[in-house]
Image 1: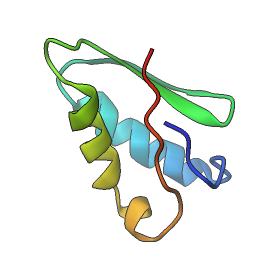
Image 2 (image 1 turned 90 degrees about the vertical axis):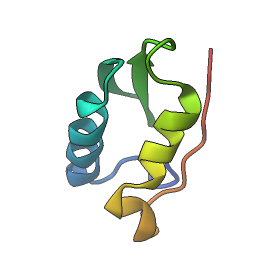
Image 3 (image 1 turned 120 degrees about the horizontal axis):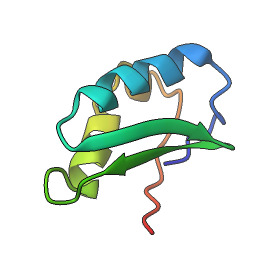
Image 4 (image 1 turned 180 degrees about the horizontal axis):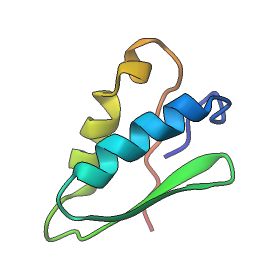
Length: 72
């Protein structure tokens, strides 16, 4: 997921890490360049569910960033 802001604010990263690491099935969450990586067990949580978690973050509604989902 890559935000438009490029994660200029450490508060956004901390907010996302707190939310994503509490999600069952998420193994790792870390910053990678201009985006973040959420490694997860697809049998426990799907990419769409993770995307919906991202959209539920308070920063999302402040217009701080718009997510783009990249799968590999």
